[in-house]
Length: 347
Image 1: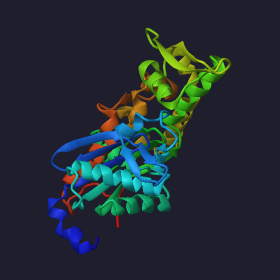
Image 2 (image 1 turned 30 degrees about the horizontal axis):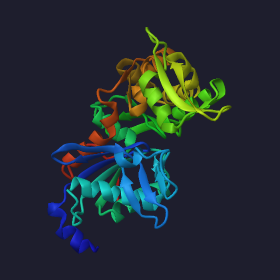
Image 3 (image 1 turned 180 degrees about the vertical axis):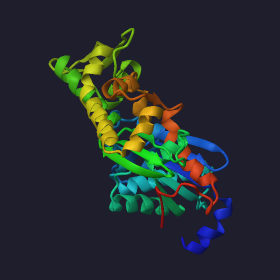
Image 4 (image 1 turned 135 degrees about the horizontal axis):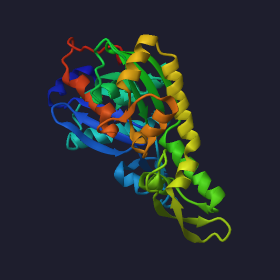
């Protein structure tokens, strides 16, 4: 479709902010707020390679598909792993927001990890364009998250945000509308799930799937000792007998299982603070570190980081939506009046 037709239909297209996450994709529509939050999962028909289900429907099929259906998570570590499937997924979400209309060419602001390479950034831009985006803009996720969390990013003071996603954790220090210092770690919620699977296989002799591990993490997982420890049941296949078995797991066991990826996150936050200019570091000690992303919902992760670094840490009010809310605030600002430019890239 030519640029002429894209501009012709722009008035009936709703501008979109997109948090394209490894585990979940969220969509913000200008003037309406967050309108969609679905798993970043796609189910395709192997015989013809066509996408059949996207989002919630596809996630329900994980680990349960027949031979001719394959479920795919097209993003890994916050970047595109399967370009064509990602393009189809973005197209599906854009049309869903526009009530299935095909003649839509929205202006789009997309959040991506700070540590993305130029090739990865151009892949996101290209996928968005092929999905119908008009003038796609890229914003670095920590900056978008800081804006979405309500941090004073335009003020002459240091604010620190730690975005713990499914595939990537990023820590950034923001001041005067730009990122002053950041670090990226390709460890997140997915690695915690894998650690739980490995632990139960090793200690209990039971094999569980990714969905079961994720549910166990959400139900009883913790990063710091709880006042009252929790227990939960998980079902899987016993390695010796090969038969289904249900075992009871305690929050202490889950905490032990995820200790290694959590320690890596703590060390990254420490390294980021140590590499920050003294005046900005003083602001962080005074104002605290804000946690966002799905990993921020693990019980006690703020206490774990606080106890390890002796710096105040708190979880954002709605940690799952910080990035997409930030992209939405970029959309709501008129071009030429944006106070924040450091993390925004357009082509």
